[in-house]
Image (cartoon, rainbow, N blue to C red; front, top):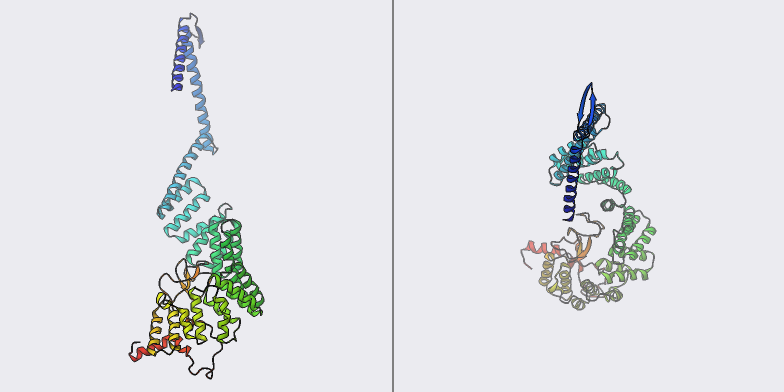
Length: 491
């Protein structure tokens, strides 16, 4: 508001000054006399001022015209001038407009339109580091993988765009299923930009799939140093990789190194069941039963599992069922209310032929959680207590169609695997397998005998018991059901 008032005041002052000046010149009697080409011109004061201003304007226009002519001649000669800069700015404006429209076309999935815009942008801008990337992305959207690959290869020639080219080719090879080439490209991209998180994840996944456990551990350590991975997650995953590395050493026959690696993996993550089993067996092979038991106790306390019980039985393979039952009491006391503990206790009592104790150990599991293993153990208990064959067959028939209980399930795709592995066989997820009940569906246990995974100790002789329990007939439920079906009977 005040500034507007000041501007109006200044304008009025200027007009008043000019008016006063013109009035003074008009009233002045003096003038200017000019002689030009033998002619005399007499100008009044005001006329002289006007002629001087017009002359100044004419000279300025003449100089500008001369400058324009000179610039035009230089433009024709190829020199940089205001005219050339004008046309350059015009081309640049059109090029960036085409580039922006091409990016929008890529984002909206219009591949062919994006390709045409990329060609137009290249024609105007002459900036291959920008337009080649747009061309490659447009070719991918349009489904022209051959053209996209060719453009990504062109990007390799420029230091500024080399990483983009390598990453683009890596993604192309992954889409084609060429994981060997993709792994090499991922290693190259990782060398160019080791802090790139997507490249780290891709390289880690490919290394895990190819069994390059040492390389995968290096990438994992890099992620930890850069703060991209929590320490507890790194510790767990590094233990997984160390375990697989130990298995590889064991396959090559270097058992000493494998034992040490397995023990190190277990120390990194004591709750990793396969690492605990492998470490315990390494201690058993060294004759160190005390350390083996300690490892298995710690793992059982974290997560009871049949593999842990099987490894615990290997500590004293020649003991009798009664001796085994007594030795297992320390392990069973760690998680007495856990379902796996109750099942293990029932199996141990069946092996010792103490069937009432086995029934007490099972409790109400047959009603609240009737899995195939629970029902099969119930069949063994009924057979051991002398129940009719129809009762035993009834339990076995239910066992064949019952849920299998906890299994190795992928937390990412819900795939079920018979054995643990660091990478899911279905989705390729790393460290996604956990021991739990499947969300839906189930797969048969790999062997019927695993319905009673224990671990039967030294067999009891016929002299010690008049009526030994036929465990094999209990376990082989499929044969019993087939026989009943052939006879036309219903259990």
